[in-house]
Image (tube, rainbow, N blue to C red; front, top):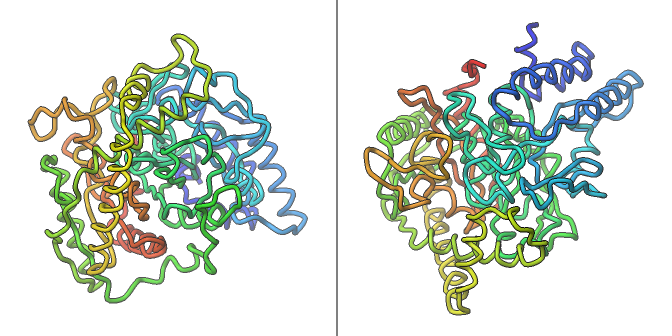
Length: 474
């Protein structure tokens, strides 16, 4: 087997080979590390590699296999962590100069769970400071590049994770999503990413994250849908540290993944009632992809009744005020706080109680509008983003379909953040390619707590429209 084929192999397939020792965890880890050393110099996806730790963990997994010990769910599988996951003894910077040398004394909940199930930690992946925006660069590590076009962004804020997965240097990657930060890089980088229902994966930083905490979902970015189901089986489930966290389902996502739903009703929307600009290539890819679901004899309908209002203003009210509260607890050192974060804090300082209560109420109305869709349909399909990846060096798209959108920082990502406000499960799956060879993502949204159907629909689409044969030329 060629080394690159190992690097691009499904984590589920890796696990089976590790169990039989057809491939050892150590062999896989060394092969992936070798590719990281080659590729990361080009794309800058990993900011803090942990290769010696990975070797130790891989050796431990192989010894466990040889001794006939009880194996973890992801035993021996190379895994990366967005550089905001607290990891004991490993530098965790949050992409900010304020935490450039911070080394946590404890693991967060998710890290504890993946360690208990035998993962091999490759290192930390790059993000913008505190994950505040939808592209990936910071003052410590610089910019991450899109593997499909090195002059374009891979998206963000989990941009290092998305670039690593599509480049074959991280079979499993964990990110987070407060306004699209898993789905944006999944779309721009051409991988599968899912933010489960809010509460599925607990946070132990809720008290320090302010209003942002109720927007953020942790989740995986992977090359295969089944790999997302695999790691979700590890990381979902309640914890007392997070009062919003939900009990673990009484079934395995992976075991139920191939149970294709019957009589499914799919509603799609190209505008959610408020989107006015979309790239024609994106629009065509989504409309073509939706029709492919007819193969499963599912009903498909354009839902023109869904009308989401004021989602951008609501998001910014929560986002800005959340950063305002979070930054109050940090040492403000001159030159270390990004200008855009300070800008958000300055705006939030002018919010009134009336502004905040309006946002609370409108957020509930957005939730109700999305729930109204799910009274008629089982799934909602939209584009993930309004355009393919744009150039490095800017925080948002300045032109879509020949129209100037430079004054609207959210014009390129209107489809993602409504579902952070509502908490519904949402995934992005590759569904097409632009004329410039850039991936296009389709968003699959499910009913609250119905993460399983989102995964099953994603798996069904992957089977009829696989994308994994394409690899960036690095």
